[in-house]
Length: 297
Image (cartoon, rainbow, N blue to C red; front, side):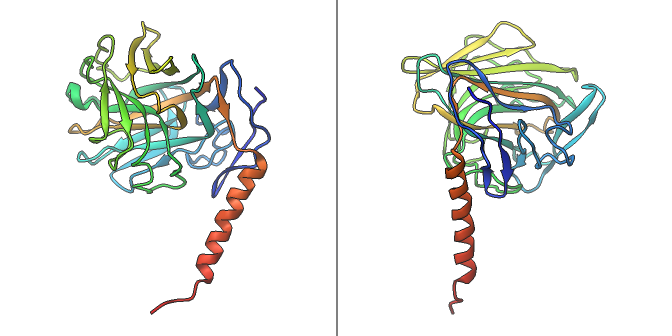
């Protein structure tokens, strides 16, 4: 695959140099939250191969880049002060990974550590992360509360209680509830449990979606351990353009930091430069027409 070079603009991703797919895994996003990917020090200002990280809820927590002594680098810190809701952070990666062919896959790896140790039951584990599709309703700014509510995908929840086979993997079906939560989801039964993580140490995660003949396979490994697997019968959820992180609904919510976020895929496409330019031009035109529209009484 030819390397993708892109930049983030007000209307999304544009200025793309190339678009290609490959049978071999290629990098889609790589963000260590340092100056190379966030040159101004803000999580929403990104340079390739990083991505902007948008908070989809308008209040109830914070998400910011800061030096983290445990990681010995900058990290993205996410806290939640509201226990009645989760606090999702979404990162679009500027194109689409579509699991079209048998064996096509997309993988999310990252490091994390909990900043506190709050009690959470197995069913509402505090730390959640997923690979999602925006369904065309892209998050482009903080506080776009409903923009990601219709997103579909697959996510994981882990915490300080051991995750059983029916509370680890979820398939998100694109209803009207917040991303990585709500009633618009189905359990994807896991092959085994995942142990509780009752410490503040750095842990590593690898989460993979793979296209099977008529299903989507899920695989999760923590700290390089034996993978826990699951299978979703809904192979129609097979195109992905963002990742998401959040905490759950326990009292008090788990606060956490993440670092070294990497997404790789075997089939990744981005809009052609001309198409991306037309999208941006159309958005400008729509804004201009709205501005010129005469007032009505």
